[in-house]
Length: 520
Ligand code: XMP
Image 1 (tube, rainbow, N blue to C red):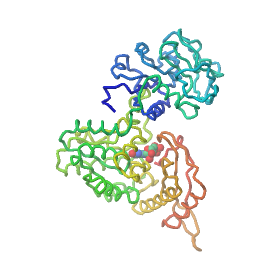
Image 2: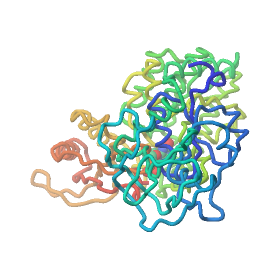
Image 3: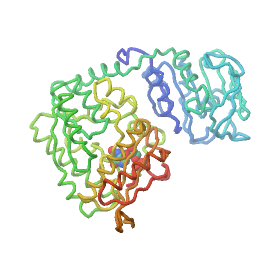
Image 4: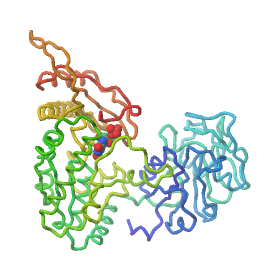
């Protein structure tokens, strides 16, 4: 990929608050076209400076008929750039250019049948069917089109389901091409970014790595850099990327907080020291964490204690290095960045997520965040291209406070040992069944509930382990995984037979929302 300012193979998404905005970005990136999501307050001059090949206007929860509805700088429509308005985006363009938008006689939510009335580059390569299922979600509709627009497609509830300007590359869709339920939606977005905007498929992870390495070299110069490893994929890939750029100037610090999964510390040591040759300091702090958590049962208190102790130890180790470390590597991903720019503003805090975001203030280090532009699957691809093993790259996400938020109630060394073994059995059996890579997360939870059982001829009165396995694309929502009964059976039998102190295993069948993925 050429330096970004020198080319225009990229698309701007203006986010009017749709729950699907991230999905639009993912679909466009899948076409190997770079795109970014920005708030709709960007004016025409800022858009011109960003220099996109085209613009997508997302959907949104507001109504363009409301006084305080998010608006668009009308001058953006005169920049002579291809524009695709989706749902709210279409209604906004229609209203600005002189059409009429009204509350729909019949709201459309869910599947609808699109009838293609006229061929167009936007529909290039779609199968011959003139009728196809698309996904609708709107309460308003365009009642009359602005001058110069023509109809490309209709549905029963939307006479203007797909429209375009007769001469200019201005398009509007009432349905959502970004959701999987829209038949041919992927092709429509591909046609827009490649055919209509003229973007080449140049956004590859190898090209990304080359560019990121140059940027890191420039930012870091000859300084020393530290990185806190968590065992998770994001910090591992960020560290490997910075190491590719500045080699021995990077030192990684891994705090063993005693709340890790089975064999996790050994894996991190062997991958970083042996496989990648990255200097690694391991701080053995398990006893300190367990001590600090003694008697604590409140989930948020657990998180705060762990967060503060982590910062204290990390700071201490970084000082002990005696280096002139001026930079801190963080595995911030694009979804974290978008959260703070979207029209919705940052989401409400459901759980205080511990990450090293608190560090810079304390340590006065400048941040190196080489993954800020990437989605999780792109991060995994970068990790693979950098030679990280599948055990690291394909690993299920794991919360910073670790097993502490998977033991309901008090944390003790015995409970930790019990949960660690049960969790390892869940992972082993899920892997054996070939299901690991298709699940977002699968793990065990320790419940401080005792129930009666019988083992041999004796009565037992022991703890319960809950098994949780979920499917998700971004952890914002999740559904419980329909694991095969025999896999669940083997997990249960093995945990009860092999893990001391457990005589009952239950399966968590709650979705998120209203539950969360972790139990605390
Ligand atoms: P919840 O439980 O909120 O989790 O549905 C969503 C995703 O975030 C992970 N998670 C955390 N990650 N620090 C982290 O770094 C935390 O405190 C934390 N709590 C939850 C969780 O594993 C899931 O993938």
